[in-house]
Image 1: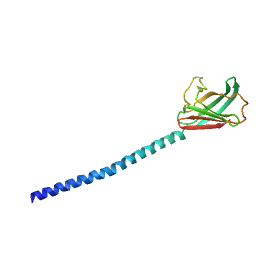
Image 2: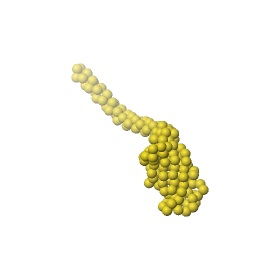
Image 3: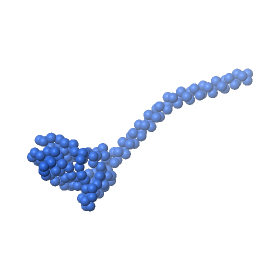
Image 4: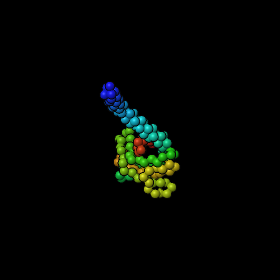
Length: 155
Protein backbone atom coordinates (compact mmCIF):
# COMPACT_ATOMS: atom_id res chain seq x y z
CA UNK A 1 0.00 0.00 0.00
CA UNK A 2 2.85 2.29 0.87
CA UNK A 3 4.49 1.62 -2.47
CA UNK A 4 1.25 2.38 -4.28
CA UNK A 5 0.97 5.73 -2.47
CA UNK A 6 4.58 6.61 -3.25
CA UNK A 7 4.05 5.55 -6.85
CA UNK A 8 0.89 7.68 -7.12
CA UNK A 9 2.62 10.73 -5.61
CA UNK A 10 5.62 10.26 -7.88
CA UNK A 11 3.34 9.90 -10.89
CA UNK A 12 1.49 13.08 -9.92
CA UNK A 13 4.77 14.98 -9.52
CA UNK A 14 6.00 13.77 -12.91
CA UNK A 15 2.68 14.76 -14.49
CA UNK A 16 2.89 18.24 -12.91
CA UNK A 17 6.47 18.66 -14.19
CA UNK A 18 5.39 17.63 -17.70
CA UNK A 19 2.44 20.05 -17.67
CA UNK A 20 4.60 22.95 -16.39
CA UNK A 21 7.33 22.22 -18.94
CA UNK A 22 4.84 22.02 -21.80
CA UNK A 23 3.11 25.19 -20.65
CA UNK A 24 6.41 27.07 -20.42
CA UNK A 25 7.43 25.94 -23.92
CA UNK A 26 4.15 27.31 -25.26
CA UNK A 27 3.94 30.52 -23.21
CA UNK A 28 7.60 31.64 -23.16
CA UNK A 29 7.82 32.38 -26.93
CA UNK A 30 4.59 34.36 -26.70
CA UNK A 31 5.95 36.40 -23.79
CA UNK A 32 9.20 37.09 -25.65
CA UNK A 33 7.32 38.17 -28.77
CA UNK A 34 4.98 40.41 -26.77
CA UNK A 35 7.92 42.00 -24.93
CA UNK A 36 9.74 42.69 -28.21
CA UNK A 37 6.64 44.24 -29.74
CA UNK A 38 6.06 46.48 -26.73
CA UNK A 39 9.72 47.63 -26.76
CA UNK A 40 9.45 48.44 -30.47
CA UNK A 41 6.29 50.45 -29.88
CA UNK A 42 7.98 52.30 -27.02
CA UNK A 43 10.96 53.22 -29.24
CA UNK A 44 8.63 54.44 -32.00
CA UNK A 45 6.69 56.54 -29.49
CA UNK A 46 9.90 58.11 -28.16
CA UNK A 47 11.07 58.90 -31.71
CA UNK A 48 7.68 60.45 -32.50
CA UNK A 49 7.96 62.69 -29.42
CA UNK A 50 11.42 63.88 -30.52
CA UNK A 51 10.20 64.46 -34.08
CA UNK A 52 7.18 66.42 -32.88
CA UNK A 53 9.40 68.59 -30.68
CA UNK A 54 11.96 69.43 -33.40
CA UNK A 55 10.88 72.48 -35.36
CA UNK A 56 13.30 73.94 -37.91
CA UNK A 57 12.18 77.15 -39.61
CA UNK A 58 13.66 78.81 -42.69
CA UNK A 59 14.17 82.45 -41.68
CA UNK A 60 15.97 83.78 -44.75
CA UNK A 61 17.96 82.54 -47.75
CA UNK A 62 20.34 83.78 -50.43
CA UNK A 63 21.04 82.31 -53.86
CA UNK A 64 23.97 83.37 -56.04
CA UNK A 65 26.11 81.89 -58.77
CA UNK A 66 29.87 81.44 -58.92
CA UNK A 67 32.29 79.45 -61.06
CA UNK A 68 31.54 76.24 -59.12
CA UNK A 69 27.77 76.43 -59.45
CA UNK A 70 24.88 77.88 -57.51
CA UNK A 71 25.68 78.93 -53.94
CA UNK A 72 22.70 78.62 -51.58
CA UNK A 73 22.73 79.85 -48.00
CA UNK A 74 19.86 79.02 -45.67
CA UNK A 75 19.35 80.78 -42.36
CA UNK A 76 17.60 78.27 -40.12
CA UNK A 77 16.20 78.62 -36.60
CA UNK A 78 15.35 75.76 -34.24
CA UNK A 79 12.13 76.54 -32.37
CA UNK A 80 11.98 73.03 -30.94
CA UNK A 81 13.20 71.30 -27.80
CA UNK A 82 15.77 68.99 -29.42
CA UNK A 83 18.89 69.56 -31.49
CA UNK A 84 18.74 68.79 -35.21
CA UNK A 85 21.76 67.39 -37.07
CA UNK A 86 21.51 67.67 -40.86
CA UNK A 87 23.31 64.99 -42.85
CA UNK A 88 22.06 65.67 -46.39
CA UNK A 89 20.38 68.35 -48.45
CA UNK A 90 18.26 67.63 -51.52
CA UNK A 91 17.77 70.44 -54.03
CA UNK A 92 15.08 69.95 -56.67
CA UNK A 93 15.03 72.53 -59.48
CA UNK A 94 12.15 71.45 -61.75
CA UNK A 95 13.68 72.72 -64.99
CA UNK A 96 17.31 71.92 -64.11
CA UNK A 97 17.49 68.69 -62.09
CA UNK A 98 17.80 67.28 -58.61
CA UNK A 99 20.93 67.00 -56.43
CA UNK A 100 21.74 65.41 -53.10
CA UNK A 101 24.34 67.45 -51.25
CA UNK A 102 26.31 65.92 -48.37
CA UNK A 103 29.08 68.51 -48.17
CA UNK A 104 27.98 71.77 -46.55
CA UNK A 105 29.03 74.19 -43.83
CA UNK A 106 27.10 75.44 -40.83
CA UNK A 107 27.90 78.25 -38.48
CA UNK A 108 26.16 79.93 -35.57
CA UNK A 109 24.91 83.30 -36.82
CA UNK A 110 25.48 85.09 -33.50
CA UNK A 111 29.05 83.84 -32.86
CA UNK A 112 30.30 82.87 -36.31
CA UNK A 113 31.57 79.56 -34.90
CA UNK A 114 31.24 76.38 -36.94
CA UNK A 115 28.56 74.02 -35.61
CA UNK A 116 27.55 70.45 -36.43
CA UNK A 117 23.94 70.68 -35.28
CA UNK A 118 21.18 73.22 -34.81
CA UNK A 119 20.55 73.45 -31.08
CA UNK A 120 17.23 74.68 -29.64
CA UNK A 121 16.81 78.46 -29.93
CA UNK A 122 19.83 78.70 -32.23
CA UNK A 123 20.06 80.55 -35.55
CA UNK A 124 22.38 78.80 -38.02
CA UNK A 125 23.72 79.68 -41.45
CA UNK A 126 23.84 76.56 -43.65
CA UNK A 127 25.77 77.04 -46.92
CA UNK A 128 26.28 74.68 -49.85
CA UNK A 129 26.94 74.71 -53.58
CA UNK A 130 24.78 73.00 -56.19
CA UNK A 131 26.79 72.00 -59.29
CA UNK A 132 24.48 73.93 -61.63
CA UNK A 133 25.55 77.02 -63.57
CA UNK A 134 22.45 77.61 -65.70
CA UNK A 135 19.78 80.18 -65.00
CA UNK A 136 18.23 79.78 -61.57
CA UNK A 137 14.55 78.77 -61.68
CA UNK A 138 12.12 81.17 -60.05
CA UNK A 139 10.88 78.42 -57.69
CA UNK A 140 12.63 75.30 -56.45
CA UNK A 141 12.60 73.05 -53.37
CA UNK A 142 15.29 72.56 -50.76
CA UNK A 143 14.98 69.68 -48.26
CA UNK A 144 17.25 69.37 -45.23
CA UNK A 145 17.45 65.78 -43.95
CA UNK A 146 18.64 64.55 -40.56
CA UNK A 147 17.57 62.74 -37.37
CA UNK A 148 15.07 60.68 -39.45
CA UNK A 149 13.27 63.90 -40.38
CA UNK A 150 12.91 66.03 -43.50
CA UNK A 151 12.26 69.77 -43.58
CA UNK A 152 11.34 71.13 -47.03
CA UNK A 153 10.97 74.71 -48.20
CA UNK A 154 10.06 76.21 -51.55
CA UNK A 155 12.50 78.93 -52.52
